[in-house]
Length: 550
Image (cartoon, rainbow, N blue to C red; front, side, top):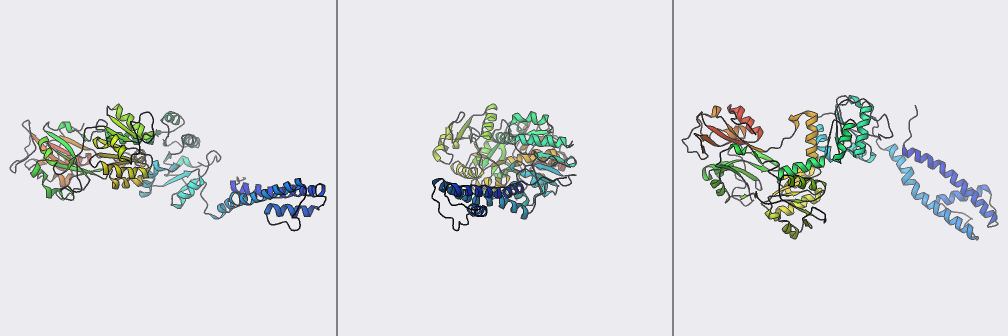
């Protein structure tokens, strides 16, 4: 069986055939020119020698002067051609050939694919999932069609195969044994990969990440199991974090008594709460409020006992009566709940965020550097005049939907310095830059890689592998094993992370508890925490939700 020659080899062979032909043609023309134009005939070997010296720019010996104008022009063109060839031959013909021969060779065939996951093209949308597979030692392979990209991945110790689906029909040989396939290329390349895999006999799941949502139906038709548009998934997540109408910050709050409310406060670095432990500030005893947790670094951290530290810059979630919550404002700044949602950046993601927010009935203000339909404030987000015209300090939430990670990090720092109280949500392309955004002052930072990785991991590993958004939830529960205990001395925080914030007795809500009060069998407890901590609370104390989580 004849193996196809590499492109660099074909080029070098063409060069080796072209050079003798060029020398022969130039030599023949030189012979004719010297005979008929100069009247000084040259032999064949002299003419070939002149042609060789001219093309290689090595010199002319005795032939260094011509008198006929046509001959002079001919010689000049031959000299320029030789100079051009010198600069052309080595970088285009010779160097690529030797690079391919002496560098480590990239695999051009799939390995044994039994139990492996195959990724078609690496990129930010799949990097989180790829890193998770590396961490869990799940076997996978990356198929790249670009040699430079494949070489870069190989240098980072990724298992990679390089090849062109359009030119190499057997490139996917053995793929039918794979566990699952993910394609993250251009939409037309995704479709080609899907069809090639199905033609090869692969019957398992194929998941595609599309650029254009209109291409979802065609990809499903040619064999994809599911198709997602990462930019739209990211926009939906940003909008849900920005608007309580799309994603309520507290689920089940209506199940609590009407006397209870939840408020969020930012801890300023100079606040007396910053750096303190929960047990040292005695918010329950002094103010009659329950600190159920804090948002920090994009995650909700439930309060777990008196040694829980309060981080400077964190957003505290506190539940109590409205009168008592007002008393907390002297220690921490309340997070604005009223006002428009400002969206900075009106690209593909920003436009979708605005569309979803407006569909939910939210008032939006759009800031962008370009004047285009839908933009309310045209200007540079890094300039204070733009921040003032955009009403950043009056906003309930600011969403930074900038397409460049470096610009997003700096803009986060600028906005946080200008509006220290405002809730700030930022998008990021690469998951590795998320921590930088938190350091710059973002309350939430969402990357397309994280969200796409969660979706894909859900299909690959099941729901238990998906990182669930830790929203605060509130529920009424029967007391179970807590009967006879003081509501604030049950150890619930330490053992589960959920907090008893009040109880309902004879139709009356109690949120402040004297030392003598004890939980009775007919009481209903108001318990708040994350889904995980509420499940731990119910299991630990055999407490049964009376209304369920809605």
